[in-house]
Length: 174
Image 1 (cartoon, rainbow, N blue to C red):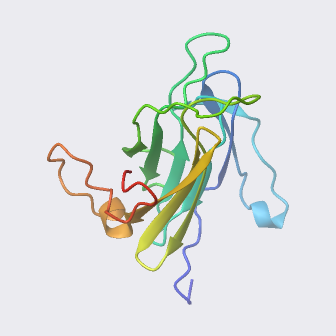
Image 2 (image 1 turned 180 degrees about the vertical axis):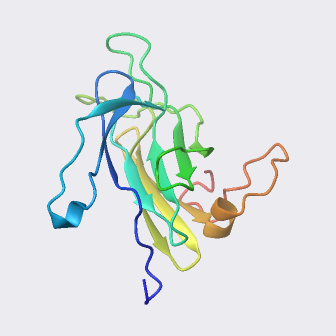
């Protein structure tokens, strides 16, 4: 737009399911003039049946933050890995991904419906950073700060995660 806002050319809505994959509905253009949505269809995007966060970066690329590990059994939900995936075509294909957290965790306290791992992500852009907040074991909240430059112009991998900056709280890991 005239004020620098990015206008979406593609609009999709993602849903979690009990299949180990996200489902998606696509907007039937023009959505703002009363267009509807397609029927839900299973995507190829893996998911552990947990909450996820999606959004659009200032450069117009789409992001999806989730736990991509499908469960291995009826009650084996795996939230041990939290990833950030990026799409440069509005969310049709996610061609880049980074592991935000993947270290083993263990709950300190018993509780109903508690799982080890990283859950309930949310993200917001501020200045030149993408802040990602998430629960650890449903006991703690951690915050990662990712440089937007590292997301939009990733450097070749040198055996470490080029996305992650030293801004992480409280543990310095992410």
